[in-house]
Length: 335
Image (tube, rainbow, N blue to C red; front, side):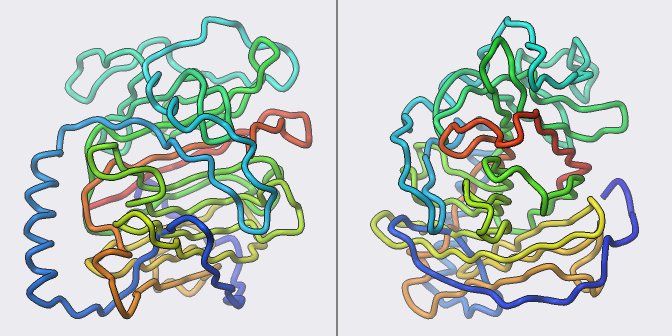
């Protein structure tokens, strides 16, 4: 973690609602007994992680339907991520534009120049997305992603040439078991109702189809200001199973929050806290453990996949405020 800042508040936990949706979701829990069958899967996972350590991934291809939200608008799912290295040469328009402040050239950690559309951040190399596709559907622009001089990652939604454009980065390395942790700056409880911030893992086609092998922390009200803004979801390892999802209220007194999930064999444990804090610091916003009592090997992802961060518009609708949006990620940690 780069920075240790005071917590935003000392609010306690609020109750959680859990529901199953039509599509499989993702979640993890603790204290799951590993029998010999799981040991074999764990060994296969380690081999898979080693073989995919340097692989790159496409962006998410799902048009997720929000809990209790209108159905998807039919945005293409097959286009997502295919155009990751593309760029849009249009200059930002005045309406809703954000000055990115992005450096003109990206340098790798070894002093060399990175390929087009890539950044080095949090000890990993990331591919910025550009082009058109789901979720949404939306337009994606690599200029909406940059790392500032302090090492913070900026994600933006900006109006460029009269079109709203979104941001996404994907790690070029697949990541496996362990803690995934993000230190976020932004008034997430006041996020525009049409905006979605995603902190998640997502499978390439070689691992599984859309709707599988994904674990999500998503901050969004899915176009409905009355919905809870903090969402945890687990999509199953095997196709055809329902997801598991839960949503939470979130009221902040500041703009710093930490979000994490611990990915273990047979379980996923989520937690969000005020400030940039450790799990036991005592400033919780929400926490949830997903540990299915049966069929855990089919319901809980256990294969190494890339990590993603994105900032996008639900069903492609413009921000309700008509203004651009920016979220700053101070750091990402994974063993």
